[in-house]
Structure formats: C-alpha cells, structure tokens
Image (cartoon, rainbow, N blue to C red; front, side, top):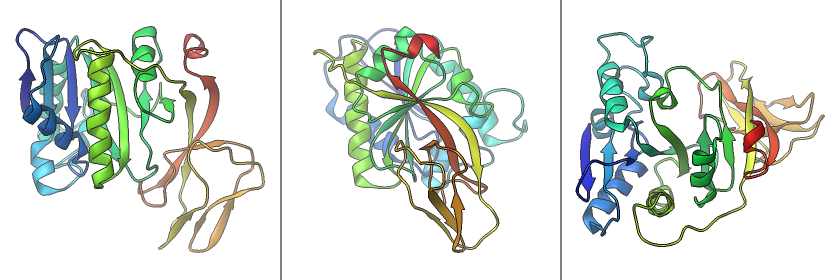
Length: 266
C-alpha cells in the first residue's frame, strides 16, 4: 500500500484508489493529484491500496480486498493484513474510494446508507445515480470506521475511466472543503440494491438492457448461449453486465426517488 499526503496536518479526508488491481483509474487519479500538488485548504490522505495486485494487473492476490475487512478472510492472505492497514489509515475520515466497472460507462456512486454527510457528498459528485447497498456483501470497506462513498468511474481499463476518476476526486475534495471553490449540487436518482440475478452455465452471455433503466415484466433482458432470460416482474438493473461477475449478471434494483427526498427513509 502506498500512502501519500497533500498539505500539512492530520487528514480527515481521504481518496483511495485501486482497491482492486485491475482497476487502475484510482491510482491514476492519485498520481495526477500528487503531480499537480494543489494548494489544499485541509490536508488530504491519498492511498493506492493494493499495489501488488495493481502491478500484476489482477483483481487481487489472494482475496478480494473489498471483501477482506473482518475475520472471514484467511489469515495468510495478502489482502487480510492489507485490509487491516487500510481500515486503520482511513479511520475517522470522509473517504472517496475510486473503482471502475464492466457494467456502465458513466460514473455512479455506491453507498451503504444515506445519512446527511454521505448524501451531501454524493450530490456534489458528477454521477448519474447512487446505489444504496446496505446488505451488499460482507467484509466491504464500508465496515470501516469512516464515512465512505464508492464511485464507479467508468469502464474498466479505459482512459475515460481514468479521466472520470480524477474529476470525481477533484469534485469530492471541493465538496468536503479540502479544495477551494463551491461544490455543484446535482439531482441524483437513488436506487436500492436488490437480489442477485444468477447466470446459468453457458459459454456466451449477452445483456440487452441498460443499467438504471426500467425493465418491464415480460421483457428479455439477457441471454445465455442464446437462451433468453425474461423478467417476471419489473426491475431496474444495477451492475448488470455479461461478464462482470462469474456467477451472476448483476442485481435487481428498485428506484427510490431523488437524493435529498429519500435518504431519510433508506
């Protein structure tokens, strides 16, 4: 793990990149911020999390770092100790964790709960949606003692994702008062994570719908080796892609409204 800092003092704000080694956009954003060395109002911690996986171009070495907070990961796994150190580094901070995805080209945010502090940060980010994931997996970074927003910056491995990650980081730092300037408040639709959509065994998968756009009952949304999958009930696709997950297409979501109107009810 590489930990750097902008400004002097004890940071209460952090930007974390490359929790997954096959998502280099966050590391690019961190390096670009360090190269620019902007005059910050408050000190900022910058973290490139899984350097070993990043250098190897793989998602992780032994275990998914974003599932390794806690006791479930084997003690001898590289990511077990790394997760402990990462949790210590961001303790007490307001954090933006930068990721990329195979599911959607435009940036979107992921949270675990939508309290006022998290909601105010998300409204200032250039994202097309926020996904609330209160029960989305165990051992995630959200379990740390920190206020965390994850942002999917775009399609994995693209220059656009790297550029988006940098912009997300700059606007996050402005929103939390670490960089001078006024944050831009946006209208952000809120989706709640639902059940996983399993993939049947097949050699080839296809997805025919767009994330965050309603799928109607009876609509064909995907296929496995040409066999169509049809929605029994309406849903909003979240993190849906042909090959993003080994055992599932993604998730069934529910649209809850617009951020600012709904966070108190989630």
